[in-house]
Length: 298
Image (cartoon, rainbow, N blue to C red; front, side, top):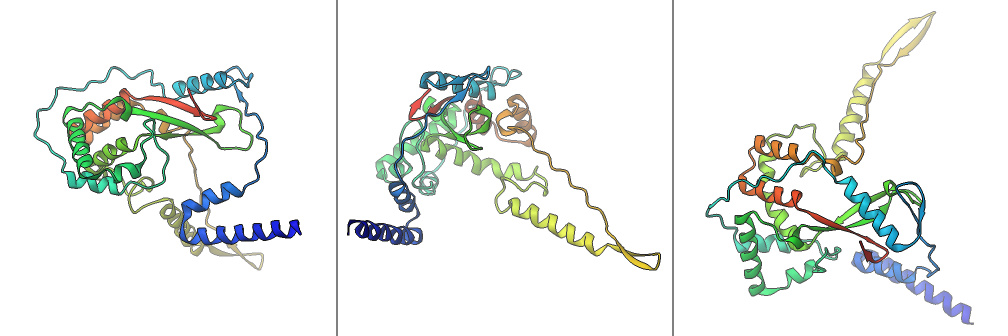
């Protein structure tokens, strides 16, 4: 009788999960997490720089800190040239900042300040005035506060039972207040950048994506098939296929190894305004980071 009751309970949970899949995706994830069997978790080990297994949490955190520092180190990068302070009357309206805050996705992980996007969206008129004043001070001075520049890296395994740091993908968490500033910068420089980007660039562009490149490749393949020729050989008709050669290039950790001095040169040549350049320089030259592993911060 007890077994029957448990079976009915599981059926009810399954029905509830199916309903949440339709009406509330965030609660669905939480429900799946709740009903998942709670088992003893195996101790996660990480390999050190010399290949030795690290078990102690402090050693693992130190290894992650070393790995991230080496990954993002740019030996050729000099000191940041912030240029002269621009005494320009430039004001970002409260309406634009409020619109950006409202567009922030809900239910996303917080940065180092532990302030959720929902808190910013519900801070009221007085809070919005303070936020508008802060963003405008940052924009005019080119100085970004330290907590805006701090990232928390979360290692996500790319393969099963990953132990080497290279087998993890590091996801960066930044504060939602910093995201507001970054969205405002992006709004202003995107039209300028778009003028210099070729039509073959599909990724990281609004209205385009990998699907467009796949579609174009398929169209090329189908057109080539129509160009196949039939050849008579020894009384038999043989179809001679047109060859298509493809070359796929995968740059290892390309976005983690951007040369910042070259980035600055590109921004100048592209015509990015000096206000935005100062902010981007401040962000990349003076950023700091920590790694979160098993609930602890390096």
